[in-house]
Length: 124
Image (tube, rainbow, N blue to C red):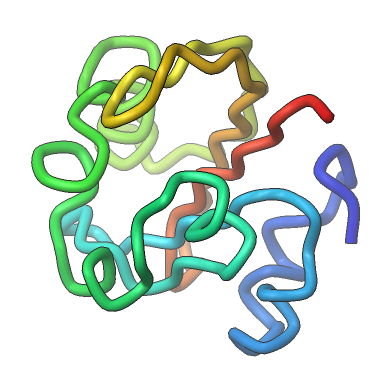
């Protein structure tokens, strides 16, 4: 699976956590209430946040408040309210509990898909 892959939302929705742990980018899956339900090993290591401390927590207020803004959280809210597909890749700077890190975020959501996803690609 590749960060830029066209059908990645459907693929993520169909793979288990062990397969998601094998990816070379961060995967954060969350439900309609923005509670984190999936958090892969790559993201846990890169962010320095253990899976146990992230799963079951609210994404935009507890886990990643630096993304609680119009660029990230609001796009998910708008897509849900409109019942539309969201697939957007943006340049972003992560700032919580770390020095600022430039990343690419891919925001994924679609009606009928179990989770919404936030993918995090950090440059090597």
